[in-house]
Amino acid sequence: EKNKSSDPESIAIALAKLKSEKTSRQFPDAIIIGADQTLGFQNRIFSKPGSRVAARQQLRELRNNSHCLYSALSCSRDGKQVWSWLSKPELTMRDFSDEFVEDYVKGGDANYLGSVGAYKIETAGIQLFQRIDGDHSAILGLPLLPLLEFLRQQKAIPS
Image (tube, rainbow, N blue to C red; front, side, top):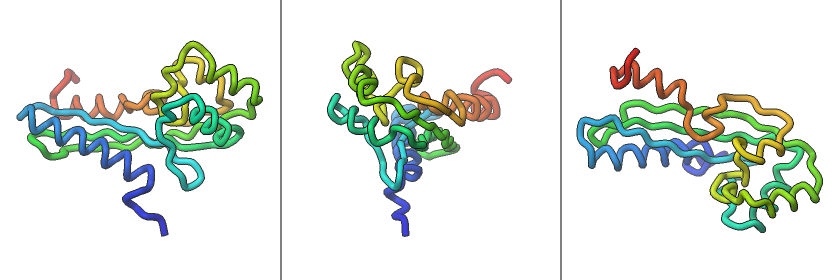
């Protein structure tokens, strides 16, 4: 049986909630948004690679496979969560060559090291994929459409 507290979905939800609740205690009456994202692949959770060696390894494991990003949102007021959302886009990497991986990790744009899965689809990382299913903003880490709807309902932004 899967340990619910250590699956990628539960971790993303818990981290987003922690961020929004903690910050909302410092700003009473404000709606505070917390967000976090995890990557689940074959019963494992991928973290930000932190090094080119780790990025190379992650990309080779994800190559020619599908994985899920869990993008969680939490809104809190006065230290209590008042709303949450979870998006689960699925991404399929193409069967790229080892040479492609080497060129990618040696490229000048190393900001992928700060992203789970070692890629950013808004930059050169889009070249890693053959298929993407899900909300684009959720893939980037902030599911905007459900968040904007919640903020309109709360009269925090114009409707």
